[in-house]
Length: 565
Image (tube, rainbow, N blue to C red; front, side, top):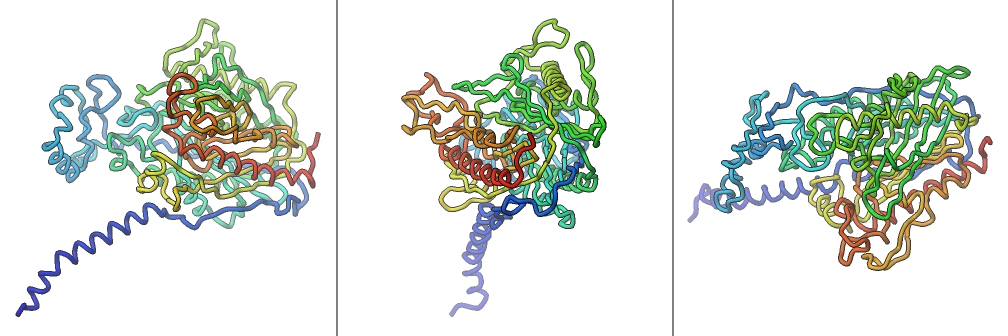
């Protein structure tokens, strides 16, 4: 007869295995579900499109926080072969991970540590934990450890209030931030401030720390630093609350100027469709030239430095903001406006970038083609010059009756490919919804005679401005699905219209379905960049439909509050 102890021993192992399996299932379920699974939006304020309170002067407030990562808490390194990568990548593994890898490598010969050591790379273990803990740069390839900081990164907020509605717009120097991380910020803001909605956007610099768990070394999921995102969230909450506390009456001026492709931006994917509009707002103390803030919206990847740069920077955005705030130095400089400049990214799918543009030097001595800080500086200052001229020029107009209205709706984007499986496994973009959907969001905002929409990723310009091509050989034999162009609907009543890209989320490239071209024969004779970083062919139609719906909601306000012109 078995003793009590022997029975316990017999059941100990299977019981432990069952508990382990349950813990793993629970952990996996939590990753797929995410922390805000039940969070949904579907609203417009003012309800019904008619302001509940009389229109008064627009109130504006701004605030910013420095979100530059703390280098003192990270390891420094020496790039022995000057290739921009840390070649002894097993140094990034935790002790138990290294033991496991060594066992696997011994069997399958995946890695030769002798070759890596010959690269001459080394690091200083600042925190003494026995592994390489650098600041990982986002964008381009993985395994880009930072060497230092060129200029600070920021979270900047501008609060708007009128007719009983309060909206805050936030722009962050980040490559992208997932929806749940933005929801956490909204939930942390003081509810007593009566903010109706907070809209976020990322500048998408490719020279800042990883905020998406995609670029943090050779094994990003294991190396991703959540503490940096927590720091961004905390500081952004502070900036939002301070901006609302700083609200004061302001006059609003708007301008739009066309920037040519040459010298400014290049579309590296056919068809070449570029939104040339540089959209501008300026807020000033009533009846004076004292500027509170300037806002810039333009579509171009901040990646003028390319993938070899090892220093943190907001790229051309830094010099653009500096130029509008403090002025552009001679030669051919302009006076700054003072106040705070906020840059909001536009439509950059396609791929809108300065890498292949030859940027003119301000002194007229030539152009800059190579990737460099010089190129980023001249590009940023050149855009600032054009913006300053437009805001001071005869085409700038005063937004006389700045009614505020905002609409928002949760959207479930049908995902495919790598994004779908990454979300299913809980590796990126927490929150999986059965059928292969990821939760995201679309907004529309009216500020008087200007209308703004949001897109939760890198939107192809043709979805907004038109020019979608339907050519033989495409993967889906469908007509253009994303019609009419969103701008057509926005400009039905508005005097100015633009789109904030990477807004409230980052779900990758948002392509027109009829231009999806991942299979041979290729429409443009060769494989083009885009599909591999997209959520799939159904994302474009879903985002387009959501944007149109939000614009049409906002357009109902024009029945009660027509344009001032």
